[in-house]
Amino acid sequence: MTHRTGFVFFFSPRLAIPQSCGRLLSLNTKFPRRTKMGTEWIDRCHRYTFIDGESGFQINFAGMNFADKDIDALNEKFVGVNLEMQKIEQGEIKNPDENRKVTHFTDRSIYTGSPIYNEVEDFVEKIRTGAIKGSTGKQFDAAIINGIGGSALGPQLLQMAINGPYWNELSAEKRNHYLRIYFLDNTDTAGLYDALQVCDLETTLVVNVSKSGGTQETKNNMIVCMEQYEARKIDFRKHACAITMRGSELDSLARDNNWLKVFEMAESIGGRTSETSIVGHLPAALAGIDFKSLLCGACHMDKLTRNPQLSHNPAYMLSAMWYLAGEGKGNRNMVIVPYSDRLILLSRYLQQLVMESLGKEKDLDGNTVHQGLNVFGNKGGTDAHAFIQQLNDGRDDFFVTFIEVLEDKMPAPISGSIAMGDYLHGFMVGLSNALRNKKRQVIEMRINKVDTFNVGMLIALYERAVAAYAELIHINAFHQPGVQAYKLASKGVIKLLTDVESGLASIVPFTGTAAELAAKLGLSDSEYELEGIMAKLSGNNDKRTLAVNVRREWNKDKGWEYTVAAR
Image (tube, rainbow, N blue to C red):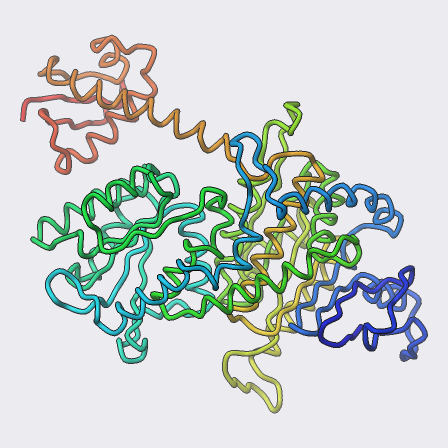
């Protein structure tokens, strides 16, 4: 199927094709003689492959287990889905649990003309050229992006896809004085330690990203960074930026202390859909990535996926495949396999986008439904030596999406005209055929190359597919009550830790099991949590400022015994 720029159609023999659409593959096209099975497969590919001639984007759904009647049966459902998707872009409340609009689709279409876009570009250029320097007068050379969830996953995906894994090893000249980029995305001290080992704080910018301003993991990293700067007598304020909502805890801290820069984040954009906003823009710009091109790709896909007709809309068709494969209940795992080293983080990014959006206990009417869709993956080629064995021979509980990149990054001839990239193509097609021969379900996607435009298209495609699928199963895709539940539960553990630390000094000296200690402290109902706390304290006795020493030893008769002694 082919067509010219400006017209995009999903080919189906049952559809009327407008004359203005350009040249399309006809069912009367002459093909070489084939077997009946081969003819059926080729004809199915003609019917169920979407191609955008302008961008080169292509997606083939023919390898999924569905019939024409299944698509016909979903057409009426997608009339309703499309109406709800229109409401999102019309500014209606589409996150009813938090009484919020959802504006990531519409905001990106006007972002490049906004004051904040120009503010970011101007700020980054001053950082790059040395017009803005650190507190000691040295030019910035690195940035630590401190955020979690969507505040990290999107920027990490883009950095890996565009600049690759070795960007930070390039000289400043080769980087054109854009910054080396490091990410803090957890409250694990190992990640912070590793970043501090390679960052000269005098030349390092710290970008703190938190929509609410109170995200504990981000807050923890920020507090320790502030302490590290202070210990080296470096003014943290002249090295710190914030991306947050106006009026948040982080916003107040940054403004009250005259941080280098504060960028405002919209309340109506969630973390997992924030990559095409200020959240993605600043980290990308600091690394010299063309963010405007990313937005162009996302907006191009938005145009393609606003088509109200199911069979003409790649995002709607993608969500329909998820729905049919998993029987509307997520009964099959989604496996994402991009055949590109640079897209290795795509599956991690999609895990959050898909699973945090669709994994819900209640539907919009308050009924208990326990919806969700598991996502896992890695990268093509490598996976043939990993979980592909199970996909081919093991449980039939998945559907797989292969993403092929046509353009090789460099010439790499192997034998005659055969190049490295040809082997990657052969491995993908061979695996796809092998899986289909085993009746396993396959979607094949194709992009011309890994660049900002194409990454923008992929992000926008999956964002709209997730939103459409949520409408199909009647859930709110834009809140995360499960995440809030674990945060509240963790606060209970931290309070218990505080109580335990204050109580330990009163029982010195003590030696006994966690059960005996719990009884001593009057915390028998919390013995399990107490044992975890004591194990953590004993493993970090030299890294805590406790009033007591805590250690543990293995007793073959009683198990772990804890000793609490005066310091």
